[in-house]
Image (tube, rainbow, N blue to C red; front, side, top):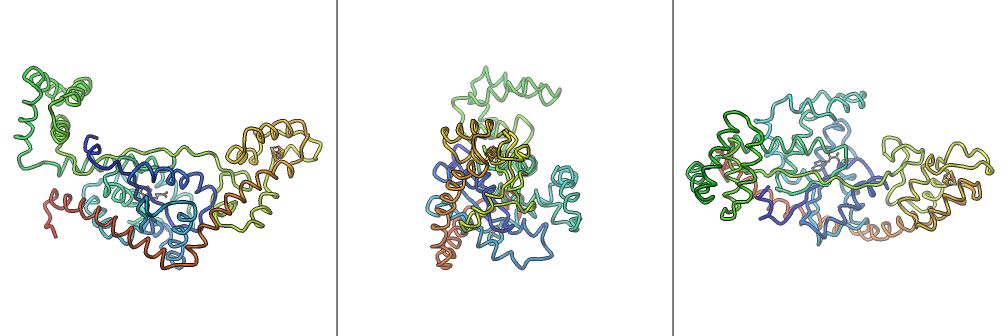
Length: 405
Ligand code: TRP
Ligand code: SF4
C-alpha cells in the first residue's frame, strides 16, 4: 500500500516463550530475523500474552522463559543496536488495540481461522473454549497493525493469521477511515488526474460500485497508481473512494514467507518441542554429539553393509543445511554404496552443529552472566516500541472518536 513507502520499511514479528529455543526455531525463523535486522527497521517481541492463551493454568515458567528466549535471540545474533527487542505484555497499547479491534471483528471470522479448530482438537488436555484463545489471531493482528509494517516474516503456519490481519485492517479502515472533508479532498484529487482521466475514473468507479465490475476496478486502480500528479495521500484516498471505504489508518502488511529448510528432529519428524526431539540452541556439546550419534537414519540400513538412501534419511536433511557440496557428494556416494557407515557420515555434521552452537553459547554466556544488561536491552526496546505504539494509538483513538490522552 502506498503509505508504506513513506515509512521506514518496517518488519514486525513475534515468538511465544514456550521454552528454550532449538535448531528448528533457529533455521525456521531466527536466522531470517538476523538477516532482516540489517535491511529493515525491525520490531521483534516475545509474545508472552499469546503463551497465556494456551498455558494460562501454569504460568510458573513464563517470566523465566521470556528472559531465556531473549538470551537465545541475542546469542544467535540479534543485535539490539540494529533492531528493537521487546516484550508484548509491557506495551499495554497492544491490549488497547486488541480491544478496539474486537468491536469490529465478526466472531465468525475468528472461528474460521484454520488453526482455531485444529488446536482445540490437538490440545485436548487443555480447555481452550476461552474468549482469549478465540481471540488469539486478533491479538496477533493488534501486534502487527500497531507498527504499520510492510512485512511480517512468518512460517507457513502463520500465514492465515497475517491474512486475517489484513481483513481486519481493511474493515477498520472502511468503518473509521473517513476524514471529515474526505469527499472534498477526493474531488480535488480527481481533478489532478486531468479532465479526460477524471471522467474515465468516474465512469469506472460507477461500473464497479453499481455493477460490481471487477475489471473496471482493476483499471481504475491502475489509473490511480499511474496518476503522476497525485500525492501519496491522494492516491490512498482515491483507492478508498473507489472501493467505498476511507483513508487507511491501519496499513495492510504482507506475509514474508520465511524460506526455511526442513529441520528434522532426532526421530526424523519435524523438530518440535512437543515431539521431544530437539537440539537446544545452547545445549552442551557432549549432549549434542550424543544426540546426533543416536539420531534416526534410513531404516533400510540395518547392517553396515546395507546400502542406504539419503532421501529417506533425516541426517541427510541436516547435511543439506550444514554441509559443503564436497561433503554432500561424499555422503551421497558413500551411503548408496555402503562405502561409509552412518556414524562416519554423521561425524562432519556433528562438528558443524557443535561449532554453530558453540558460537551461540559463547555469545549468550555474556548475557547469562549479566542480567542487568539484558534488562537494559529490553527496557530500551520497550521504550522504542511504545513510542511507535503511542503514535498509532493516537491516530486510532482519533479515528474511532475516543478521547485522546
Ligand atoms: N502466533 C505467532 C507464533 O505462534 C507468534 C506471534 C504473536 C506473532 N504475535 C505475532 C508472529 C505477530 C508475528 C507477528 O509463532
Ligand atoms: Fe543417513 Fe548418512 Fe547413514 Fe546414509 S550414511 S543412512 S545418509 S546417516
